[in-house]
Length: 336
Image (cartoon, rainbow, N blue to C red):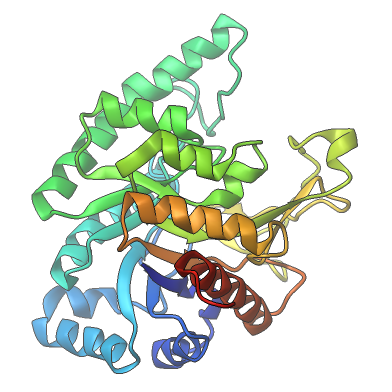
């Protein structure tokens, strides 16, 4: 297996410095952003698409640091009801497949996307627990009229390029758990659309990631290492929590998610938080997690995604890397 990090957390550092930091933590894999919600400071896309020499030089930089570029990441909403966002994010996925093939990278990570409820909708809407048939109408439109045509096209492009597009099962998308992942894969006869196993979004839904890996089997083709801590507030409010607040575009701390939309501010006294690997679940869990992934693919890449707001940029990576590598050693039967 390969253990690394998604370099978006090091966006303020040149790629060479970021790779040196990862190697210094004992890691040997990197996942680099190529579009979607976030910019791509570590990927000179235009140059790499047009120049074989540039691609060779770029990949050589990874080799010099003992790091393998295992995936491109373009998480976004390629099915957004707002055309401005939809067109860019959908194009970014197609472009990522093409660039990954040119670089010899066989994994692209993205989200499945979320449309509006009907052809006239202006905003995306998550249709979950459809106890009223109105919600079934919305769900059927989202899947049959929007998602499936898009993902059939992505499947065809990915198969032609021999690149596997790995979907992060993320709430506020049509694919957010194993059942919806399997539904999509079966509906499009997927060979090159698969799952990224990011346990963080499964934890707060009450899903056991190890059981999820068992259910998905070889449909899991890439993995993220990100932890979640369930807080005492969940006993009162549950895990579905809408107490987020708006951060206006252009204001201090605003993070653009495309078009006029921004990342919301996290609630105080939250029901759950993303934390560094090991701060929500112990090394024993992560050992079982790695064992389940290893059973699917002994060469699986597992990349840390650092979103712990309580730890600094490097501090969080260090903590996560220690836990992940301790779990790897435990899996191999060596002393931690």
